[in-house]
Amino acid sequence: MAVMEFHGVREPAIAGTWYPGSPTALRRTIEDYLSRVPAQTLAGEIIGLIAPHAGYMYSGQVAAYAYRQVKGRQYDRVIVISPVHRAYIARAQAVVTAVEYYRTPLGDIPVDVGFLRRLADRIPLGLLRDDDEHSLEIQLPFLQVILSSFHLVPIMLADQSLVFCQDLGQALAETVGKDAGGVLFVASTDLSHFYHDRTARVLDQTFIRYVEAYDVPGMAYAVSQGKTEACGAGPVMTVMTACQLLGAREARILHYANSGDVTGDFTRVVGYAAGVILR
Image (tube, rainbow, N blue to C red; front, top):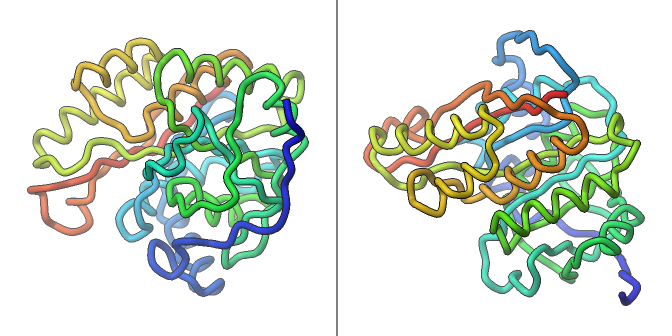
């Protein structure tokens, strides 16, 4: 395989629109969300998170339920798996942006290019020179607030089939190897889109049941049959597969809401869930 070259900085694409563009306002917003999350007792080591990726005004409070659980913990590497929402990115089943740093208003995050190169020895990764994908970027300021420092492994999925997600999950677990204690996985997903609240809650609770049953094949089948929806089902399946291979045995959804809970309009909502994966 050709050498993967990484250069430069990926500038923020949605700062000032999807989340505050001022460092002070951004940090204050996230800390306010985190402060509203009640204390929860979780038995086990957190190896993975599930978090939504809408604008902070819609899903930031839900995301905080996941991120609050790892606030102050130390992870050397954070592997963020997101979907892609634009066709131009779909040049490969999984893609990464060929940069050395991701920038947000809170500073620059170093990309773990060594890990990406080792991963690419196990599974093909496409390279982008630039991207404006929001579903990965939206997770980064939360990570910068809750963790003192970390290296980022950013992966975007064009192929969300069960077979590919399982293959990628296995490749990730093999690349992590014995270093799992210093790694946090993040699956970026929203749930159903633009149904009435009554329909959305049925679809979303179905997805939640498959997460909590730790049933990756069942989730894939339910999505394929239209029994549930998640634009990041592939990232969730990938993260659940990798975490299970690294010893995880439980996934738990900590909070659910939809956009209607914020806007008051329950006629066309988007669903959001926050979860943890434990071992």
